[in-house]
Length: 299
Image 1: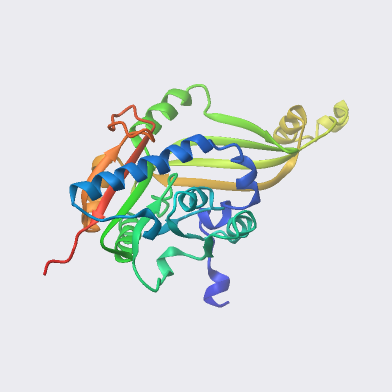
Image 2 (image 1 turned 90 degrees about the vertical axis):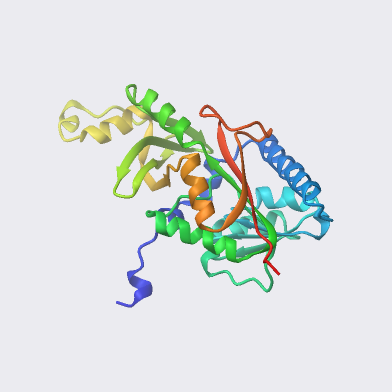
């Protein structure tokens, strides 16, 4: 068996497909627009402070983990010259159909070799912390540093680990699960915090079922004796057997840990926002958004 056959897909190579798009089809476009607006204001503020002559129309941007291009399209509308890259072929093909004017690449950013460095690199909607170890996640940041030009900027939109732990901990006593119906499919989602040798992670297990249009008659007493508990639960819920199973797993880095990782990757001037309106970060903030810069080389 060759190396390609032996390769076992990571959760993020497996999950981001048409079922992912279906589940998250109602994501808040207003929040996405707010984030791009905050990014523009932050760039303008940093440019003014450093007396830089910056025009968004001339700024080349890499959208890492761009998915089907939801944020790439907004960046393009704002005047940025955008390239998006994602490991999911399914999402990239969807994005190319939706926004054919945007350059969307299918591939792993760790293997991306741009012709010239980008002036801005963005990672939006928790596209970080996927790898198991700190060294792997640090290597990811170092790669983004390497493809950012001198004086360029990096924007990382991440979860607030403290709030995630608090919310999942409070819900755990009552069972932290969710059922979502989309277009004849039912998504059952279970969330929990897991403790690994590399630190805490938030894990989601997503099981996709086809929803029955009509409930089958309840099994007879004789047949029910041979019915497994899981099959009985599916019958009661009006579901067929599972058609797909997925997982999400993200390392729960605190803000202080993230700052150390970004500094170790040689990013400077790190600012942190707590939401897409630009408010300061607190432990109750919905997000942890990092804005930093690659220093100019010393003459």
